[in-house]
Length: 388
Image (cartoon, rainbow, N blue to C red):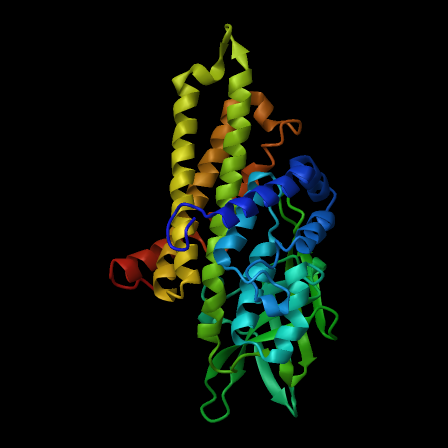
């Protein structure tokens, strides 16, 4: 792609090939074996970090590649297309790395970014609460000052990968001293901090990254745990949400490619009545439609990443939401069709596609639901009245 077009330049093509080669060395068998054993893909994560793939979007002065979200999304897509999606890439370098790089102090950048970039440190992200759901304005996790420290109390839910993280970027709220008005604020909380605990949520997803409820029981933090301003975190928070949506789209596009490739290989080789079943339009047309839908979603993902990297936050917000919606829908349909194309074999462990059924639904729910995206487009793009 050129810097603003949709034909990838030599550097991006080379990055795709390098990431695809690494992921192929591990493959879906490695990924699913780890997932079913509730183990992490540590070997793949470490190697991706050493090769510079995890921090490709972070500033060079802090160990990153100095590129953009486009390149990080490219890494995510190729990993997922090889059956090795690394969910914590959405969280650690894309959300947290971006926020700290943009709003952190020099000391915070030096402390956190090099480890995030090379994969030796993983940082989770905690915003969702049991009662607030998608309404981030209604979070109740509270931060109060006590001397020079912050005291953080509250509860978070559906927080990915806490058990493999050394720290969590927590979205809380502070009481403004004059008016008492609650304002959102971002805090880096080490996972070994006193008062910080978590409990796994049993999911039907087959994934190496587990989901957790997080409890913050009067967690005492130093003053420098606050990232950016105590009363400006809405802007800071949304600086991480566009990359989150772009990365979600990238993972869904990659999963769609993975499913389509599995199905195509099978229907080419499988013969009934001496004819490959892929010759029948009942199978070839749905797969062709899946391919078209994935390619369209990928194009919008590329647009969103390009706009974001060019500094067009408003344009990137619309494109990122549309990309996430399109990719989530297309990926779920592609996985479903892949299972159908394989028939009974599509539900076996041997062929490795059934495990993606539940995972493909994730992208229609998280990191933002399809319904909330439709709300955003209706109100922001079309100017329709707000419904909530």
